[in-house]
Amino acid sequence: MYKIGELAKILSVSTDTLRYYEKHNLLSATNRAQNGYRLYNDADLRIMHFIVRAKSVGFSLNEIKELLSLKVDKDSHSCGEVKMFTEQKLIQVEKKITELVRFKDSLQLLVNACCGGDEQATNCSILSALENVDAIT
Image (spheres, rainbow, N blue to C red):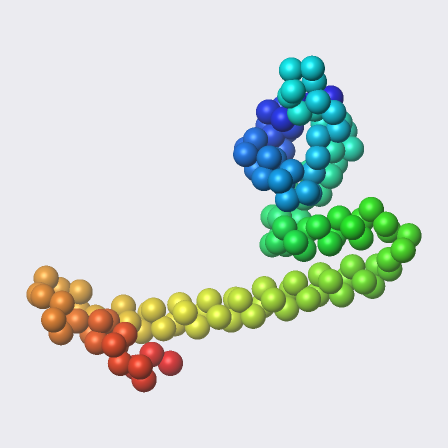
């Protein structure tokens, strides 16, 4: 059995993170000690490894809940379902990357257009461009 601090250390997360996952029903303590401390077993540790790994590749808490439900009931789901779920996440990430690249390019244009001098910002090209609806596209 692991106390919350021990589990957090093994997983390299904070105890607050574990409590947050409990609050969102991703994890629950297997037992409580007489002093009220949360106690976790090896199955809880495996679930937390799964959650931490899923989080590290970009799945949200709601998506992790869905993945956990697929994991718990593997016999009722196909590998294809899991793949489709993951492909949908990949598409979301690709869209976000496209959006971030567009942001980066627009910001680079703003930075390149600005002299960055010590003069007052009255005629600052960045502020002017942001005021002009058609300037950044």
